Image 1 (cartoon, helix red, strand yellow):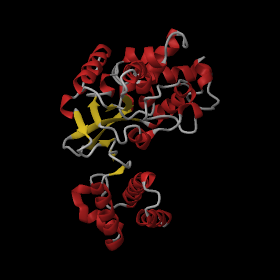
Image 2 (cartoon, rainbow, N blue to C red):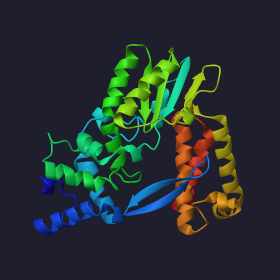
Image 3 (cartoon, rainbow, N blue to C red):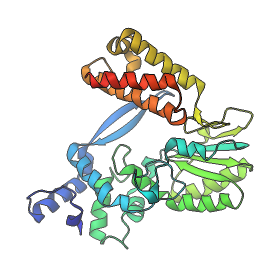
Image 4 (cartoon, one colour):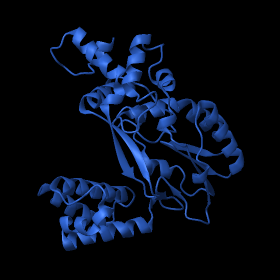
Amino acid sequence: MLLSFHLLGENDWSEDKILACLYALGNHGEKHYKKIRIPKKSGGFRILLAPDPLLKYVQKNILHHVLEGFSVSDQATAYRKKGNPANAVCGCVENASLHRGKPLIMKLDVENFFGNITFPMVLHSAFPIQYFPPEVGKLLAELCCYLEYLPQGAPTSPAISNLVMKPFDEYMAEWCRNRGIVYSRYCDDLTFSGDFDPEEVLKKSEGFLKAMGFELNRKKTRVLSKASRQTVTGLVVNEKVQPSREYRRKLRQEIHYCRKYGVEEHLRRRGTQGMLFAGKEDDRGKYLYSLLGKINYVRLTRPDDTWFLEAEKWVREQLSER
C-alpha cells in the first residue's frame, strides 16, 4: 500500500531501498527541518519549521496522493484544495463574506495551534486504522510530524489541521445553526456572527477546544458591534467586504515609492524594515511577488479599482524584466 503512493516519485530504486529511505526519514524527522524566524507585526517572532528538499518532496506527495482525498468541513475556509468541486476554494475573502453586515461578530484565536496538534491526533484524524494498516499509518504520521507535534511550515500541516478540527467544526456549526449564528474557521481564527450572547458562545467553544487539547488565547478575543469597524481575516465586513482604507493607503504609498525611486532603492531606504529583502536580485523578485500578492488581495474585493489595476500591470512588467 505504501509504495502505491509514490512518495519518492518515479524512480528505479528497489522496494527495499524506497522503504529504507522512508523509514529513515520518519524515524529521524527532526534532523530534516530548519527553523526560520518570521517577524510578527505585534513584535517578537513566529518560528516556522521548514523541511529539507527531500522531506518536503515526500510531504507534498502525501498531500496530493493521500490527504487531498479526504473531505474537510464546510466551515474550514483556509487551506482547501483548488479546483475540487467538493472542496471549493474559500480563502480569506469568502471567509469574511460569511460575516458581512452582521449585528455582532466575535473572533477567537486558538493558541499555539499547530504546536498543540500531537502525533496521536494526526494519526487518528489523518491516517486512521480504518483506511491504513497500522504500520503504514504510523509511518505517514511520522513523516508529517516534528518531535511528536505538527510543524508549522510543512506542506502537509494545513490539510492535517483541517482534518483534526473537523469534529469541532461540524459540532459548532450545528450548535450555531440552531441559534441563528454563523460560524467559520480560518486556520486558528474562529469567527461567529449574528445576534447572540458572546459569553455563551465563548464557553461552548472553549469547553470543546479544551476537551480536544487546545486553549484559547483570551488576549485576542474580540467582540465587535456594527457601530465599530468589523474586520474578519483582515477585511472590513460592515457593508462591503474589502481591505481597510489604511491597508490600501499604505500599499499605494509603497507602490508609489517603488515607482519613484526604483525597487532596489526603495528596499535600501526601508533598511531593517525590509526584513527579508536586502536589495539583492533574488530579494527583489521575492519582494515584487509579495507586492503582487498584496495588490491581488485588494483586487479580489475591488476588481474595478483602476489604480490598483495599473499597479498590478507595473509590477508584472518589473517581474518580466528580471
